[in-house]
Every structure is written in C-alpha cells, then in structure tokens.
Length: 149
Image (tube, one colour):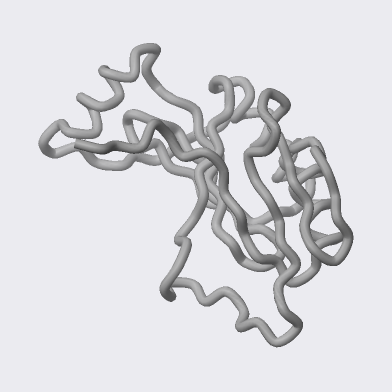
C-alpha cells in the first residue's frame, strides 16, 4: 500500500507576512531560508531547505476561526524537557497566553501565532518512538496537568 514517508513541510497563509515572520523567527527561533516580500517567507529549523512557509494571504481573506474547518494546530517538536522549559520561560516573559498539558507520550505547550493559528511546542516523554506509540494506544490514557518548576 502506498504510504507517505513523513510530513515534508507546512505552508500557512498569514495576514501580515512581516509580523508573522518576526513571530516565527524571534519567538519560536526559526531561521529564514528565503524571503519574498508580498509573497512568502520560507523558514527552516536549520537542517533542510524549509520546514514552514508563510504566504501572504489576500487582503479580503477570512480570519482564522477557532474550531472551524482547516488546520487545528501545527506541532513543533523540541529537543527535550529542558528546551520545552526554556520556551515556557520565554513565552511567560513575553506575556504570551498558553495552555500546557502532559499527554503521557508528550509534554506540550499550546499557543497561537499572530493570526490565531494554533501551535503546539512539544517534547517526547520516551526515548524510543515505539514506547510513545504504546503509551498513546494504552487503554485509559488520560492527559495530566503539566507543571514547570
């Protein structure tokens, strides 16, 4: 059966390319691969050509509607708990509203970008992917409160 290898990259339409580029680079730490004013900014996590692209939306584009059709959120994996803790401090210092959850197989911070697009910053709780999958599939698994010290 044909099967994708992985999600290659994500492209989102934004209302203000400059503001979104600033958010994704200065707050989240993406690097600019190439920027085409009025069209789009291609961003990388530093290893491949681009992981995320921000395309300038049409001036009359409808705003993001929470719970509406389309993208619910994108998930950005960070290296480990220490990195997630560093993000938590940075987001707190910037006054960015967030929600935190321990899913068992991952620990997550949820925020929104300037257009209201949902973003999850997460780290895995297990070294082996198979252990995380087993946790996800375990009967009765429930989310727990995530505490940063």
